[in-house]
Amino acid sequence: MPLIVQKYGGTSMAGPERIQAVAKRLLQTQQEGNAVVGIVSAMSGVTNSLIRLAKEITPDPQGRELDMLLATGEQTTIALTAMAIEALGGKAVSMTGAQAGILTDDFYTKAKIDQILPSPIQEHLHAGAIVIVAGFQGETRRGDITTLGRGGSDLTAIALASALHADECHILTDVDGVFTCDPRIVPKAKKIEVIAYEEMLEMASSGSKVMQSRSVEFAKKFNIPFEVRSSFHEARGTIVQSESRGMEQVVVRGISVEGNQAKVTITNVPDHPGCAARIFTAVADAQLVIDVIVQDVSDRGTTNISFTLNSEELNKMGDLLERIALEIGAGSVRKESGIAKLSVVGIGMRTHSGVAAKLFECLARGGINIQMISTSEIKIAVIIDEASIHQAAQLAHTAFGLDRE
Ligand code: ADP
Ligand code: ASP
Ligand code: MG
Image (cartoon, rainbow, N blue to C red; front, side, top):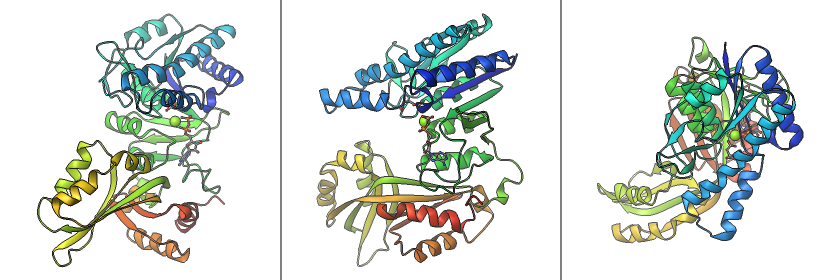
């Protein structure tokens, strides 16, 4: 019997009627002759409100306790979904991440899956039940609850599809699939039919939060194709799979935007071996995640080094860089928030030229100033003023011929 894994996100679980609709769809999938594992998220807004609640108690909650709290969001929805299936006359069993055999490291709030022991799920499937697993959570080998990073139910679904050798994995959400840009930002964005793992990964890690980037990394590593589609109707969505012939014909597959970024510039850094290492080792030791780095051409023995990071990361930085600048004899440290990143992604860039020129030209026509540029084999990203990011996304979307007719 084919096995189908279906993951339902927060908006799809947002209240009793929505949960009943999810239960109906899971049951229908089983009645069509499949074994079914459903992964569910917390109701939309619940994880955020649990985090807010914790921060009202203490600004810096301990990771173990935070995960204990956050996991309750999904524990609520697994039970409600299983009840809804039973109420429709079906057979269902809810399982926490721990009960489903999801073992992780103890990096609380961003735990990595070490191993999945799928036999408890398989036993329930053999008994004819629809198994409803809590997304976003696992447990350490000591039995402590962990969570897998925001959006982590996507990872639960893909990792379980892999461990159970599922025939299909569906990510059901509140949009019809993966679009050429977030449809809330570019209304003319269109649904992509097929996208390569690598493109989906670049888009997810540069702001297209339709998929958690870690989940796409997992799918790419273990070659788990999946489909992103709407939970509200039956239309086919977007297939995410390994690159196939002909996919390079499309130069730009999609555009991502990421707001809430900040830029740090250290001026007059002595142009000696070891200075950049000193700065970025301190940043890494403080566990700050940085993004685009640019070093200017050296002028009279000094250079300026700039990098971007999320504004929240900047708030955690304190006076770390001022201290390092003093130590290495650099000049001032400038910090600016209110910037954003626009990324243009496509595997076709490997074989086509002129993408950068076209992007810069369309931004110039819109009077948008580029502050930093970064490129990879399949991506060109620019850092611009956050106030212009939506306009920039629309301009680039049109320039690359992605607009819906
Ligand atoms: P879920 O709760 O189902 O996990 P998410 O909110 O995590 O859903 O992801 C779906 C949202 O992702 C959409 O509502 C959309 O606004 C946003 N999104 C961002 N980029 C894209 C994109 N390229 N294509 C589709 N949706 C996107
Ligand atoms: N509920 C978790 C979150 O909001 C996980 C998920 O929805 O995927 O991040
Ligand atoms: Mg999500």
